Image (cartoon, rainbow, N blue to C red; front, side):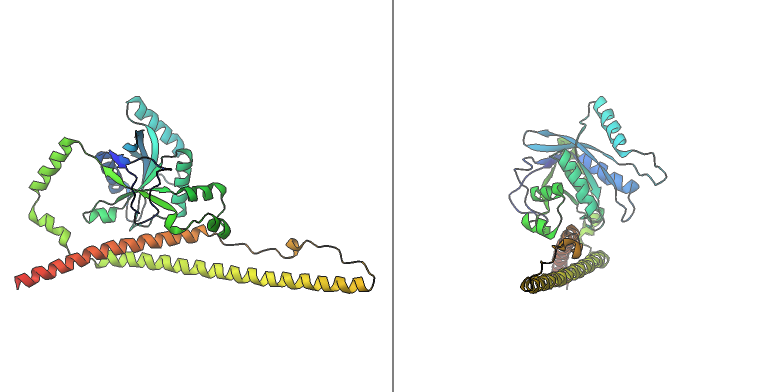
Length: 339
């Protein structure tokens, strides 16, 4: 079973799991992981994202994911396809054969860790708003292909849930709620459990594996992977720079309008004082909000998502380079012994 467990340590991305919002560990069966991997291998191509539904149940103090099924691929020509109806029929069929059918979240593949987006935020909010225990599993096939299973579970923090409910993504709203890119998501640790027979089989397969296969993990070539990560990081930094320029333009426009509004009010006051000294009635009151319409503020949620994605890329590069440095030092030591 896939087992999500709250932890006291702070995860690399997002805030620590709050026991007030998710008093559950997450546990997941190994075959659920295999089905997610198989789904991507069959339908995912390159940067194409595959998604599916997670099924399970709450057992005592943990959330167990015991089954899953994929969202079918459909094109624009399939206008009559109803995803909600498809999910309901699948869960009804699973219930008829006595399989856990309760909806506990969804999963999604990612391409080089690029999953922090508005689409994921909106989808997870919908799931979590309807089912409090819902999680989203992020599967990275690139890292997994390099010999290390990359599967992480996330939830929206309570602060971000309140912001999404109120739909107040303004600078003032985010500042009041103290929401930043580092506390938008909380990562929930995962425990993958196998039966004893599966563990015995894995030990036998490991004993039968050849020495050459084990040495693949010591491959020193890493240029293409690191280059791709840095390229995507640079793209997000460019987007952040453009967003900062937009916000600076908005701030200058707002400041200029405030100055014009202040000057206008001062002129009106001076003119009314002169009219009063001449015994004339003051000028009629005017609606300043109609004369000086404030410029449209750019949404700040997009900036937070970009910053969160940049943070994820930085963590990916950090992990990748630290592993490669270890390999390089190991290779240097082996080369020194050989000479």
